[in-house]
Each structure stands twice: as C-alpha cells, then as structure tokens.
Length: 235
Ligand code: URA
Image 1 (cartoon, rainbow, N blue to C red):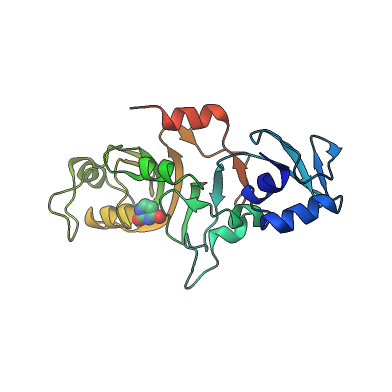
Image 2 (cartoon, rainbow, N blue to C red; image 1 turned 30 degrees about the vertical axis):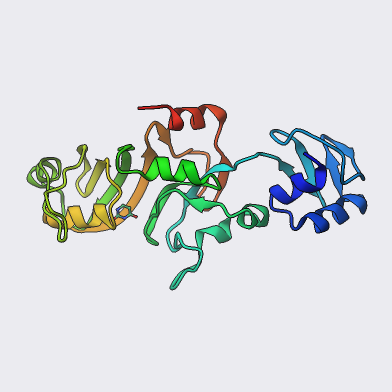
C-alpha cells in the first residue's frame, strides 16, 4: 500500500493531508525519513514516526483498556466523559469501538477494535464468552446469596431465571462472578435479585484474557498476537 494511504488507514487524516505530511518531511518509516507519499510498504508492523509520534501500523486495531470509573462507553456521552477520550487521536479517527459496554461506574477490562466482525463474534450470545467480575457489595455476602446467583435469579423483563456460570465468595463483601451473557446492568440486577446491592464493580477477565496488571487505570495497550488468537479460536 502507498504511504499516504497507510497513514490515512491509521487515522492520521485524509489521504491528501497524509501525503502533505510525507512531502513535508514529517514521516519516518522503519527509522528512515521517507518523503515520497507513493512509496509502497506492507502495513502490518510498519514502524512509523508521524510528526514526532511513534506508531506501529496495523490493518485492524485490537487493544485493551483499563477503564476507570466515571467514563461512559459511548461516542456521545451524556453525563461523563467518553472512554474514547482516553485513546490517541488516530485510534479515534479510525473509529475504534468498545466490544460490549461497561457502565460508567464499572472499572477494568474493556476491549476495543475497528474490526466489526470481531465485535459481532465476541458479543454474540451464541459465543458465550465468560466475563469475570469482581463485585463489592453494600451488605455482607451470604452463602445463600451466592447459591442463588449460581442457581439462577429472575430479572424483570427476562422470560426465565438467569444463572451465573460461577460465583465465589472472595471476602466479607466481595464476590467473583462469572457470566456467560452480557445483558444490560446484568451484574447489578442479578446481585439485587439475590438480595444484596453492588457498590463497586470491576471486570478482571474476558474469556482467557486477564486485565494486564501493568496497565494503570486509563491506560491502554495493543493486544498481543497470542491474546488475539486465543480470543478468536473457535470454541
Ligand atoms: N454488569 C453490570 O451491571 N454493569 C457492567 O458494567 C457490566 C456488567
């Protein structure tokens, strides 16, 4: 692909603007200045420096974010800033989207990508990707409540009781809950139906993928090839 198109595909602006960046001597490729917008390169793994900003090119972007509380998973947030504000401009420009949403007050693992098929596959109810939540409750957790969550609780507007895949009591007011579905406010509604109340919620894992402990709240990183392969492996 030509360099101007590669830069455009990475979210650095229109093709013409990207061509101008190159012609102006503002783009390095694999450590060397390239002033020809029509020079051809393979996209994946290309090391770019664009006006001083280092960037690894990729055909599709897959990343994990450690979502802080107080951010909405929406492009048009209503009451809080958007999680997309935590990403660099090129990723926002190329229309990276959250893979399923977390509530504004939920923290933890959020995947984002500009691969629509990946989003569809990961969020499909048929795929049953396990989602692990660390739940802090307002009242002490009882063994009966944990058992009710595994047996299934009836939620308003649901035709049948919904059961957690697993539920472990991890502290006086703490639960680790694994869910196979991704229904609206599901953890909060299930815990309420079991007779308690969620006071804080953190997602620690999705499928085989754990939130990277090196990522501070608000930080993101690319998924590794192995992480991506594990997520896309057929069940
Ligand atoms: N369940 C909830 O209630 N909230 C979330 O953010 C995710 C799961």
